[in-house]
Image (tube, rainbow, N blue to C red; front, side, top):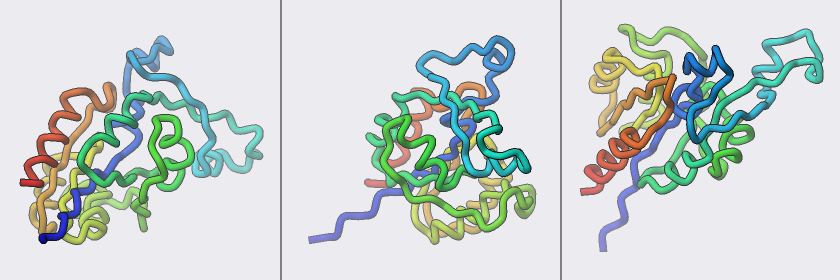
Length: 186
C-alpha cells in the first residue's frame, strides 16, 4: 500500500485576496463589494503603529471579509497556511470571521526587505519554508519576478496566483486553484 501524498500547501495573504482593500468605491462611498461585510479589529501591529496612544484610544482597523471564503477555501484540496503580515493575528481576527480553524503561519523573519532581482519580499522566505513541497501562493503582490525567482529556487511544483486587490478572491480564482491542485494529485 502506497502512502497518501501530502496535499500541496495553499499560502494565503489577507490584504488583497481576502480583504479587497484597493476597491476604489469602498474608499469613496464606503460601499462594499457584494458578499463582503465590514469588520473592525485591533491587531497588535495596528496598535503598535499608533504608539504612544493607549490601545483604548486607537481607532479599529476596518477590513472587508466575505464569510463564503472560509468554506470555499476549506473545500479546496490543500493544507491552508497563512502567508500574510497579519501572521498569528490572522488566526485571531480573520479566520474566525470567515469560518476557518487556526492555521499554520509563516513567521516572517524580516518584513518588507526587498527580495533579490525584484522578487517580492515574501518570495525567498516562502521558498525556504516550502523546502520543495508543492504550494500555491495567493497574493496581490505577485509579479513575473516572483515567478522567475520561485522557478529558479524551488525544487517542486508551485503556482503563484495574483489576485486583484480591488476585487479579492472570486470564482475564477477558486477554479484555478482547484484545477492546479487536482493536477498535482495525478
